[in-house]
Image (tube, rainbow, N blue to C red; front, side, top):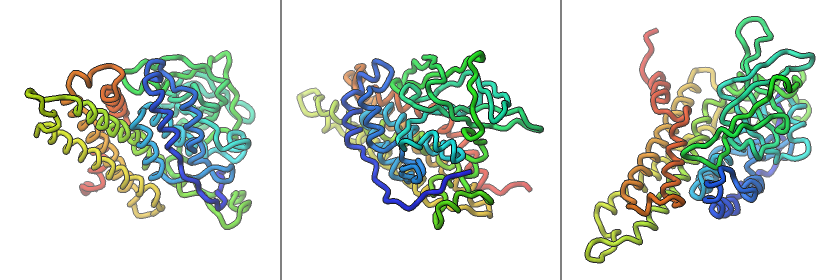
Length: 399
């Protein structure tokens, strides 16, 4: 069962305070490998946790374009904060596919509940129990788990006949252990550690705190019969919950890269302004430097346009039965992958022309360089699969 949204005034995300907190603690977060508590609080205050929460629970049920712009703004100060922020919002959207009773457990007291997730790939052991499932195992890369209150975990359900079912389960954060496995070159402060539930301490997850992955692929729907549309007449599932997961996954992962590239350009500009050519003239007068600036700034702007177009397609998503939806999904995957490729290339060029000062640890340029390469390595942003999906919508099939 899905929850419908009541009409409400949608507040805007507030990035200013979060940007300031992220900038203030970026170097410390990098050293410690975790976000500062002030940054975590500022993410919540900015409205990221509630951004996709159904309005029934006081959430925003907001749009993708606004989220992308907010995350990119924050990412210019700290890509790790932007990464955790966009996932904080995204995981609320995933949890909105829980049955109503499960949603009430998460958001009945507040729409600002922080949710982490490790849902790709499915892992762990899931066994049927009366009224639900027993869950144990280990899941990798649970970004932001250290400051979460709930965790979404995925496992294969073999309890039925036929192929196993890909099931997502909501577990209270205090019921899982954290194994500190994240010691990465980039995005160091995301705390993307592994989470563990020992077999001897298997967690019981009731039916109402689970849903199957197909709900993410197809988007949320009102159900016939006991549809909650009957509870709130004249309203329906919010547009952000109808969007299939594959349409926006790459887009959301790409948003922090846009911020990191902007931060790299700003840091490079400051460093370049401090340097002099032989003879004392400013390095900024060198045509090679000017060309690097123009090209990198244009590539960053081009990536912004690509991601903005993808976000608009998500916000304007409508269901259809003629196969056009697959083309839109492929277009968004293409544009997200190409945008990150442009951003990584621009930052690479800035790093090569930034001089020795740009290599110094703790500087904004080298941190952005590491962060953007960490983002570009994500499976959802690989150019080859995105190109294959797009080509399949362009070239005629043999059948």
